[in-house]
Length: 178
Image 1 (tube, rainbow, N blue to C red):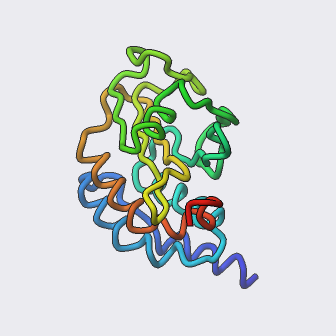
Image 2: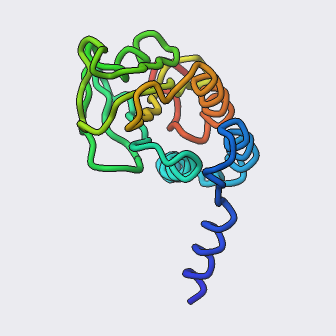
């Protein structure tokens, strides 16, 4: 079947060596992301971005929460089932949204107001996805089953990558923000 061959070829083309240093896997992401995120539909691109990051690092959960009015609403992800809606003043995702900057939490149990969607998650990294005007339109959330799994370098590399492909990950600007 031609579609099966295409899917196998695509998955093989984006394979990662999980034994490679983290920096090397980020370098691979940088090279592969623009080629993969070529669809006009931002949801399809979010889904492939989440899959690519999950393939590269194998973290417990990776995915998007989209800004919808005063909430963050679950978008495409890889990992176990997740919280469907997150509220503006609670949790790591909300903090990244409010601050419009990446947030690294070394131990989620020590983070006041942490929203536990999975008891397996031990550390978390969230980066904002901004439109051309700098407004946060979504957040990219990464959870690890390992305490202190993320460093500032992870936040910087993911933020830089997200900034590079953001226009492919979000819909048109919000009304009044064009």
